[in-house]
Image (cartoon, rainbow, N blue to C red; front, side, top):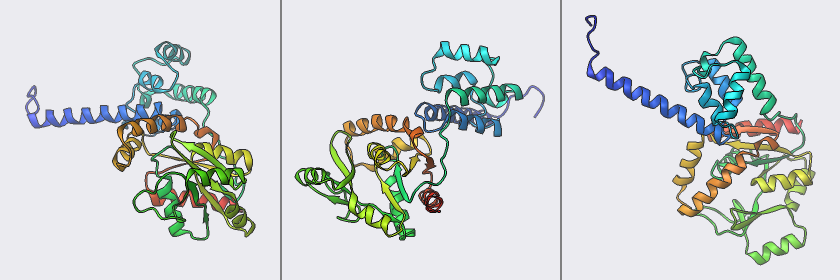
Length: 302
């Protein structure tokens, strides 16, 4: 191309589309930070590993204001304290700035520290629509030696769900009786509608027989199990991105708009509680996530 000649129109269109895609990718990543799907430290590590990635090309100002509870005023004070220019991008930080930023994050927003193997009672929880049931079903299929607890619920069966396999479907009167008789290890009302609970006896019998037991329950139930059995190993299942979690919920098609909105609000609260758990597993691929949970169960059994 001769000097001063403008690039062909097709090149300009391609460059424009690439720029739009990059902006959308950074916007999605900021949502992941805000919704706590990705920790700030994880995003910083991605940026330092690849300066051309979505994380690497994100401005430090955008990164900091994406973190919950950090507004523009606090952001500017942090930048001044760390001696980082507002125009800097994460991937372009110098060695001293990288070290200081990570030290600040670890001091103010420490990541959950995984505990060593604890007991053969494992709890799998996570936000709504993250795929807990699908991962649990994969474990049931590939590792029948792991006892998968079956919960009781007052909601109606969804298409394809079987009594005694996916849930025990009971009415409110029977659920009340199970509570009164102390038959439930944990129970909770989920999404302000239906109740779920974990029958105690099958778990006690499986543990007594030397089996590993996996409970697939919600956040409220996980907290109750931790209170009743402090040695239980708690595993939090994360979506790969916040946008994918929303897509999964909308795509499932089993809830109306009001219910979806209610569940997304619940998901935000649930994601904020992941620091209470011993381990985190990302459900980007069901088979991989199931294998990671099984590895944790094997570590706990040793």
